[in-house]
Image 1 (cartoon, rainbow, N blue to C red):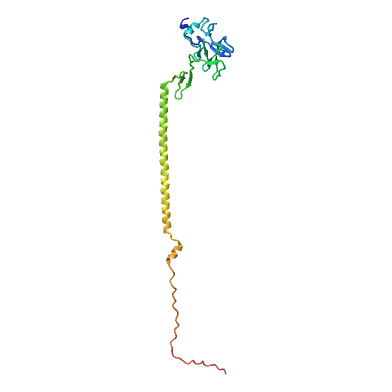
Image 2: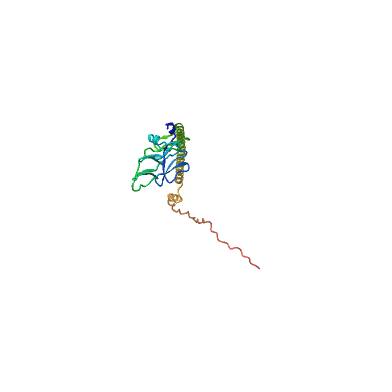
Length: 251
């Protein structure tokens, strides 16, 4: 088989070990050791050969896979235990003391006689998530690399920073105006209060209580004896003898 015949990774590679059954879209290549089965991508072939390989045709492709070992699906993890096999990404590949192997779910606790196997090649899982400042997706891989569109994200970031600066300046101006207005009102109230207090003090100083006024007048003047009327004796004149009026005598 030429290299071009084995270039399709979805049709060519080592098979997947599954605890249970294969998916409907996969090729079920049979059982290895119960309860594990061997699965290949849909449309591929798994001829009865060394350690089960997934081939693009009915021809045996094991020899080519021995030269360039990889899983039939690029998202699977590759292990070796006397022969190559693959597990779902994130699973635990392990070997037994009976020279068999298997794949355990994440967090699988090894039983007696089982030991963990090292990953020969880690599967690449691509996920597309929307970037916070860009309309284009960010592609991340398990090996830590990522691909992000720089032009649109940078422009959006610059626009966001500009909007943030404008908002901060506007907020500072509004805050300064409000602060100045509050200070002006306080000063006006203080001046008004002082003037009112001064006016009140001046009014209080100009008014003298009645009790205080009368106290300052002093004691009343001593009584003044009124001038007595004097009786004057009539001057002595001629003392005439009182004449008796003639009497009337009847006949």
